[in-house]
Image (cartoon, rainbow, N blue to C red; front, top):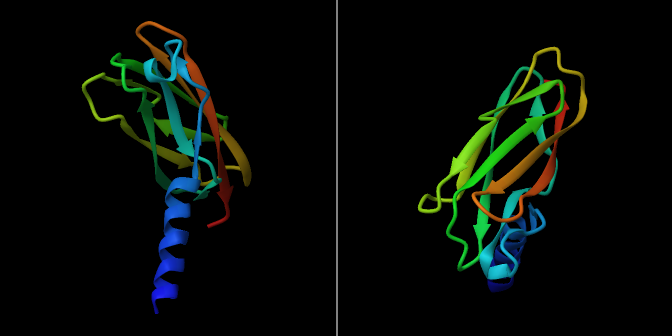
Length: 135
């Protein structure tokens, strides 16, 4: 029983922390003065005509205390909302995106690009894939 619990906990841990993709670092020169954008690393599946919520976040370095503007763009065929978000330095770094696939959206993979631009410092960006499947 203990072995089964250990296996389940290990798989859960891997699922939570192994299913994220991060951007190159933006912001300041050192890691403590920068930030990364974290998005799902596995394909997000959505059925034609449905809406799905996807979580993403900013991982800030210990000394990175600036607002970051996020610009979100999707490939033609799907839509995202919001397309612009200002993550304040004092706010929680989590953002919920609503992805919509039209009823007649072509089946296949679409890209969502997220670009983070800090008040000062270097911007960074990351992409993730949304797969539209039949209902």
